[in-house]
Length: 396
Ligand SMILES: *Cc1c(COP(=O)(O)O)cnc(C)c1O
Image 1 (tube, rainbow, N blue to C red):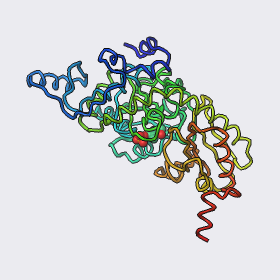
Image 2: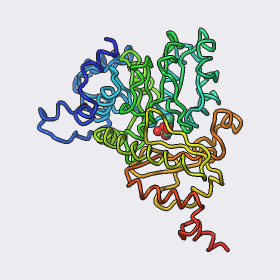
Image 3: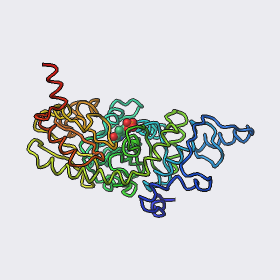
Image 4: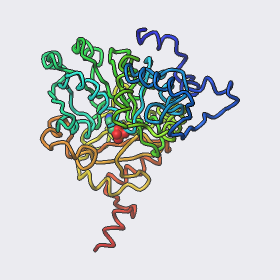
């Protein structure tokens, strides 16, 4: 079945967010989803178990029978997978221990077919860039601008990899045009920043949609996970890789991620409204030389400071200076020092990640409180007796 059939039968996103993956609960006499922590399951019929294992090994398809072993499948994680697939409008989704484990599995699926070449557009999340550039998985990467994708594709190209809006510059790409340039090579779009609330890449022709579930899907900064939403054919290959390499999502993480999805639309829309307001105020501020905010919106704002960006991260009081994003509280970090430190400095700068760039993940706080904190931090905490001032005082 084509992926559009799945989006066509979907209810509104806000409804799916709270109901998908939970349809059987009332029949079970439950309201909250059960958390199944079993690593193994009893089976008194070894012949039947052998046949089921053979079928999984051959196809990667999961049957309706009871689970066998937690590295194969888990019912709580499966609820999260079902729900995310519905939100992204795909047939299936396969969850992993982290976003990087999910990306690794997608690369291995293709590399195992001898398709070891990857075409990618910068910037990407720093560790994704590093994974490709270092060739850790035996893959080879060609970095291109979107216009160069078609020419870079070779007979052994297994994937085209893009992020839009990209981490950390929030560069936006024309996913439809890119999908067209890919021809028959699968396009993997990292949708971590936009979330399905703002953008569903399969509607533009992406075959694979990747999330660091650690970010907005979880939404509370307390769970790490990753997921690939795609057609069932690719999902089967991903499950086989997950089974053999072991990068499984823990069931408790699956539980928290399913819970996070329920509030995803509300969180993303509320934080985006605040982020848009802050982006406007930053753009009008003489202490800021550039602001990057996507046309599709979102809760991420990137901006370049006229002064030293390290002063800002040292001076925030309400905002937390920390890597990661997508939590209920606002975080700020300096990509050249942290999230993109692992990218070669020359490659980093040429892909627009300036040494003055700060990346802010806007949370659910009141916009005036956030602005007050940014305002004093942009002045290096002057006149507020901020933490930077206190630290300086203690040292002198
Ligand atoms: C954080 C992030 C990743 C990696 O996800 P982890 O869950 O940290 O492994 C991948 N892509 C993007 C865009 C990210 O922000």
